[in-house]
Amino acid sequence: LQTSSEKLRAFIEVIPDLGLILDETGTCVDVYGGGDEVLSRQVTLFKGKPIGSVISPTEAPRLMGVMRRALERQQLELIEYTIRVNDKIRVFEGRVCPLYHYLPEEPGKKHVLWIARDITEKRQAEHRIEKLAYFDPLTSLPNRQLFKNQLQNVIDAVAEHGTYSALLFIDLDNFKRINDSLGHSVGDQLLVKIARVINAAMTTGVSLSRFGGDEFVVLQYAEEDTLSQARYAARDLARKLLDALSQSFDLAGGYYVVRASIGICLIYGSEMTESEILKYADSAMYKAKREGGNRYAFFDPELQHLADLQLKIERDIEAAIEKDQFVTHFQPQVNETGGLIGAEALVRWVHPEEGIIGPDKFIPVAEQTGAIHRIQEAVLIQACDFINQAAGKGLLHPGFTMAVNISAIQFDNDRDLVSSLRNTVNDQGLSPEWFKLEITESLLMENVALITAKMNDLRAQGFRFSIDDFGTGYSSLAYLHSFPVDELKIDRSFVDQIEAKGMAVIDAIISLSQSFGFGVVAEGVETAEQARLLIDRGVCAMQGYYFARPMDRASLLTWAERNTANSVSSGC
Ligand code: C2E
Ligand code: CA
Ligand code: CA
Image (tube, rainbow, N blue to C red; front, side, top):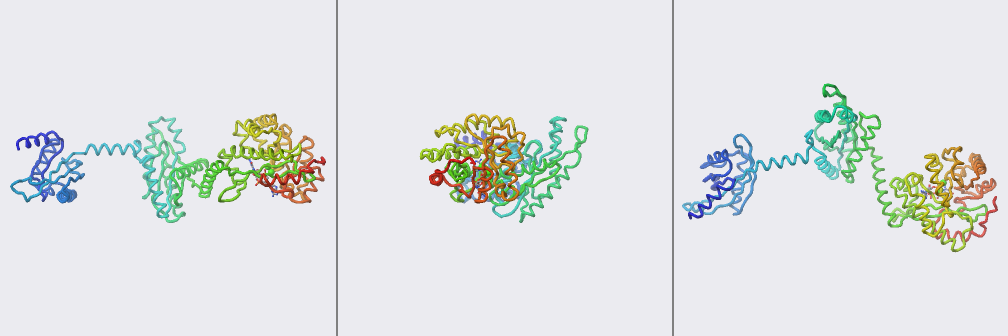
């Protein structure tokens, strides 16, 4: 007995925790040391008193409940609670364990051992860490991380309830100037003041975060039932914020006027992601800046829709390239006797769900994303395949050329354009002489020196050039002869109007090409009459539905078999 009581004394002394023995009514029967002096003194006073009388009435029932549970379940129970010690709130972690036969003289009476550990400092440290992780130290506003959590909650709530919310992205217009001229510490003071001003202007149901630098973000929780309600609420708040900011701030002995641009993105539906919402709000903010600043702008839902669609097309194009869904069709170019003298490669997207998609739908997107290079390569390879097959069968007459459309953007961005076109063609066992690159007139006016250099390079390799849609742009005739051009392609709109005003333009193009030594081809020939009028004027290269529509490679082979006999031009 002596050994074990000696052991207990030593244990109690060495551990920093407090030990209390309570009976089942909550009366403190024994108290054992531990903790600091203040605490020990206070706890010694507990002895003989019911616990409910010494701690706050709000905590007492909870503590009694834990005690009862420990006794009922006969197991260790844990609880965190606070006690006021010397006018300071302290946090304790209690471990409560049932004691059997604590008093041998009263065997029926139940007791618990309550070990209390002071975890005040640990909790304070955790709190500080959380503050560092989630709050901006300068303004004490929630930081980007906490904001993102809040935004995700709003996104979830909006998706679940079908409501509408908004995000306002605030960027100061002239902060950088003030910061640079007055120094960073003055800049910091200004940010603190601004944070206060914005905060004061906020209504309920919104939260303000600092995103870093001079960027603040306001998130509206206030869930609106309709899009227009959300729009009004966001607009009102934006106006209020701009109003609040339009005051002068007293800084470093001077007064400074701050202006802000606010971009607003409405949040609704179940599709929007955190990063999209921020991107949209950001681009709206730039719109506000572009329009002069000190104003707000909404991200246009129309644009938002388009941007979404674009994103989808972007992803789909990448996948389609992998799956070889870009298929090249060919439209014959014929001479005045209807014989095959060339073809234009026109790409289609054979989409498994949407069917055949025309180039106008995806080429502009592919140009923006850079996917155009790979699409173009696929087109060129398929064009080579046709030439190889048709030439193998002896279907192509000596001057046959394959017209391939090249996007202006490839001239601008693709530094390897010359070598990649040449290599692709060579890899298929062909030389560039088979090809005519169709470029638009407007390209010629962009960067004359650069374009001319690239065209000359390609020409030196053997490629030839045709100016597509000629007459619809405003190419400078003064420059035209300085480009290595081989052919002008009369635009469909003039052929369409050939029996009316179109004739004058066509005559002009013909005489222009004669004086510069260019060839001429007419596109969009739909009737026998149009063909006859063109031939009358000496245009002996034509392309259009009247002769043939664009068709796949196998069909063109068959078509060529029927139309090759009379393919030698009379040179009309
Ligand atoms: P484009 O170069 O002006 O091509 C001619 C367009 O007119 C083709 O439309 C063709 O199908 C159509 N067409 C041909 N004959 C007639 C006719 O008699 N009447 C009418 N109404 N239309 C006719 P498509 O195939 O939809 O191509 C549209 C545009 O897409 C092309 O205009 C070209 O700018 C672009 N494109 C097509 N393939 C490629 C490509 O491989 N690369 C690039 N960069 N652009 C391409
Ligand atoms: Ca073309
Ligand atoms: Ca054209």
